[in-house]
Length: 630
Image 1 (tube, helix red, strand yellow):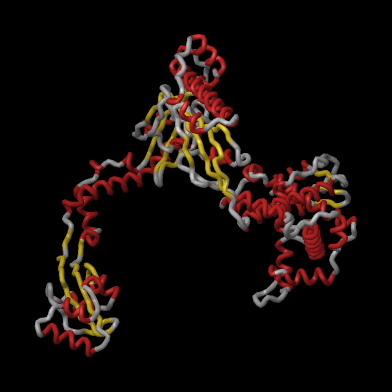
Image 2 (cartoon, rainbow, N blue to C red):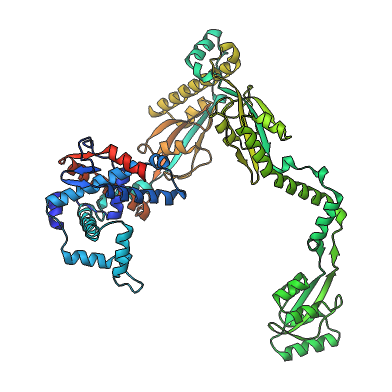
């Protein structure tokens, strides 16, 4: 079968696995012959091969599940359509039907024995021992909502399609010469010489005349239109806004302090150092050293330790018990300051310890935390009120009240924005920086009509914002007099760009005619700068990425003018040196991606060639009916 397929596609060396075929269908267009003419219960037809509603919906659900896994969210039908799931599904089923029709015409099929083995080898139908499990197989058929005969037929079609795609496109499509050329292309490095021109390198234009400003204004009139402005009423509700510390009583503060008294108590802490001895004999030697007047530090040194090694830090009894044991902690907390313990059996062997610092237990007095408790109680009380206030506001809104009236009825204060555009700027084109949840608030405000009730917007973990559109000032044309200063500034910037562009092109032309780049730069009161050797995706602090890309957009003598990193700057860039990297191999990931693209192109041509010989139709009405019922 494979040999006959290779014969069908002529001299193409092709290839791809079915999984890649399914993915690549996402970008293949459906043949232009897909028009009308269909059966009432057929989604699509390619020649004599039909796509049933079950086939279409199974493919749709699979595509939808894939997109939902990628986005991490469930999608509505409209969202799925925007993601292209409907178009992808139609493309899939028609492409598969095209291959099935080709299979039918050429009498291609698997033997019963081969098909049975393929099904048995499918891990989805195997038990934990790797053997085919009839119950698992039947469950898969049940979940697919298919008859066993139809399921087996679908497996056969899938397997045959897989063999077709392997015959048409598998393995490496591109010749070794392409790999070598690609490696050379990727590995090439260039040293660039360039001149940066800005406003200091040109004579600034004279101020525009009234006639010039009028001409420029008329040519760019829409740029200066006043945007639509909206007058908004905002009601912001958060615990911080509602909190009233004056309502918190001294009795409440005292009760809270006492209920959380443990949080204000700090237990005694001690700085403990320990020596763990390798044997009881070593411990006894240390004990004798100390009894003879030796220092703890001497014992540490004799045992290859420093004070830093031995230091357990400043710890409480509870902490020490948790990291050692109760006996160890009890001994440490019975020692006097600067005293050394007798040898005890510690968790790691014979141990001697010293306490070098004692920090007494303490209690933070109420006076030190009163302000903090007052604020916390006020915030908690405000958070408790928010749900009740939200319901009151929503009930008032449902009864026809405006946000302002609903707020007044609830004893709350609103804020009015006299004029704001969709980007959050006021009538003086200054950005309003303190709109709560600004992007969401503005989006909702510019969707709503005057007086239209809008849903509350979440504001932080426990707050809300309500917005009312009070008045709409539609967009309008401005007169030149209103924006003359801005027009003059824009005209001047545009003229500077024209002069800079002309100056840069003049230098480029002279350079291409054999001029010396350094001399040309000096004439323009500029200087020539050079980069290190850069790859195509390289970076240089002095050049925009677009300039580096342009420098590789030609041969070893390439030169060009590109925009600088500001509107009023231009760069004349030249290739000063080309450095080839010998024996470089194309990165495997890039080589695979390029080969996959070639495989996709080949399969596109193969599918398109097949479709051109078949009558291909689909049933839009049935598809919409199926999707509406899903």
